[in-house]
Image 1: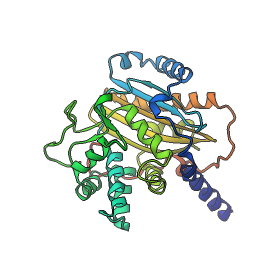
Image 2: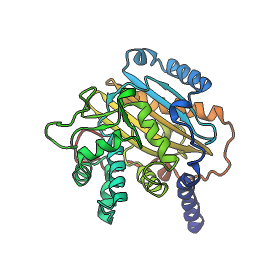
Image 3: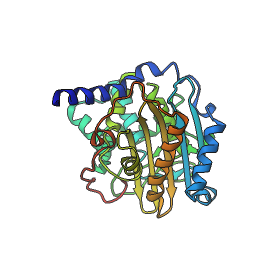
Image 4: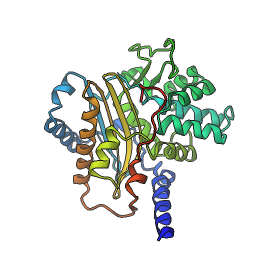
Length: 321
């Protein structure tokens, strides 16, 4: 029995990453060209059902949803997708990307210690680990990667995007973003683009995209998206990075559920933002399920702890989660 369970979990992990190798050709168009009226209408209706329309109108809430169940026909919806907000720990995904670019260049060694540090930075949102990686990579280099033509994850033409302007430690932010003066920022659409490129194997290389995706799996903090999915869809696989500080709340994930795949991002500036995200992810998951009823081909069910993660000890810092 244990052998069968181990085999099933191994298959689940393999399926979660193996699609990257072949997805690149399917994700041929830029994400911004994948807007879909049907999914846009469904998202706006669910936002209204959750009584969050006013929050979107006041730009307290930004949301992006990308259905990639069929990699040949991605479908994207967004509300305030280019609204840049303070995103706390969510931009640690940018540090991860830059670190793997350094590794590709041969200027950073992926030792067991560095792999563990990067994984802790993502799964447990360790600020100490994030600062260690920033110092190894270089903060200016991180933002050069984000602004590069290769990625354009921070693009002035689209109101900014992912940005890392200081270490995740005490001290002054000396490298705030040039448009909004934000130290750790993101937009919903640029964050969704990160996951879109990750799933298509276009972050650094297909192999390094797989390794980054593995680090994003098994999240160690059970709140926001993870909390919502653990309640409604405990068998979902989630590859995720979140952030919280004071009234700012952010969550982002690539989710695989019974043969369905989608990207979900939400950014909020409201004391109730964390609660919003727990409900938002349930609503977004329902949209994808309704669009693809009965899709289970190729899916392997994992236990709830393997799928959405079990709460682990938080980072030593009390904020920026």
